[in-house]
Image (cartoon, rainbow, N blue to C red; front, side, top):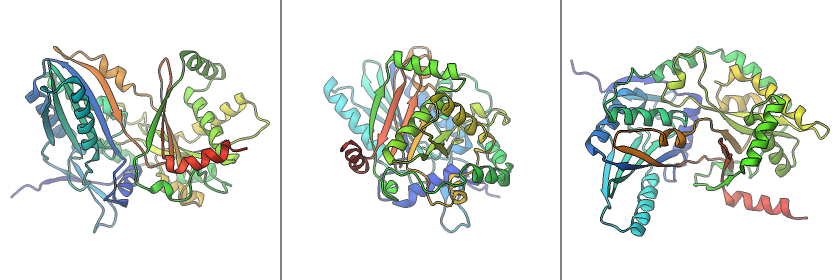
Length: 409
């Protein structure tokens, strides 16, 4: 009997369902949920071995071989294929001068990111290896966010180069075990907790007119690096009050959004890791485990900063066991179609510092670049370190009017 090309069929996580919606909302427009990583490689590179290692990743992780089906089914599913071909491209620009190489590299990066994935046709990742000459290469990896989260990226890349160097890896922690864990959670209890947390919320917090955040255009990016002194001061404030630095940034973000919108009952999105301590191996799992959830912050003029921070951390702690519920369901419980159009992400996986410390025989990773985006009107990604890096993604067509209104007397 001929073996089926389909290995398994899985349900979607709540966030996967949301990302699938945005991918098919306008299939002719750019898909903002593609993640691109660029690695600068210096030294002797075995191109065949690197491609073989990438192929082994597909064999190792079933969830890298999935395609998504949403038509002619009662609910969307992800279909795991037994085998898929690795999308691998090699480009040689070693004969170009330094200035021309820089232009070509940017063109190749932009072209790769501009190629939409057909989510029904796995695998939803692509590799491009660019030869720069003199033992220098640039490896570009493009992957759809629906496959994996930021926490997974250093795990995936660590495995890629371990396989490249011939290291024997332990069996991968199967993503299916997370889906199984998710199916066993108490949905009714989570619904009750979220209904109470959002009780009395009169309206969403929006920076732009309703539904404009769904427009599938690529936002612009602005980076702001705080000084070491200010970073240390924020860390000291958090330690002194017994709260996390994440809580401090969340509170500051909520206050800013309150001032921009003139609201004292503010809601914005936050991204949580979704890696439960009770699920063995979840910290080493490759897949999409994160979830986007609403954070509600009620601002009281008479409240001290310390009281605000302590209250916020306590309120968020009460939701920890219920972070698996999907955003769409939470919004329905709150009685609103959408609760916010601004997002905040506190990244706790130092991708660049991790990769730059690896030793791969004669090969070294000398540079790391990353490009991603969201569909939200405004998002803030916080990257910790000796100097906090604040990365703002924004849609200027929606924010310019708001800024002018706030700045006018």
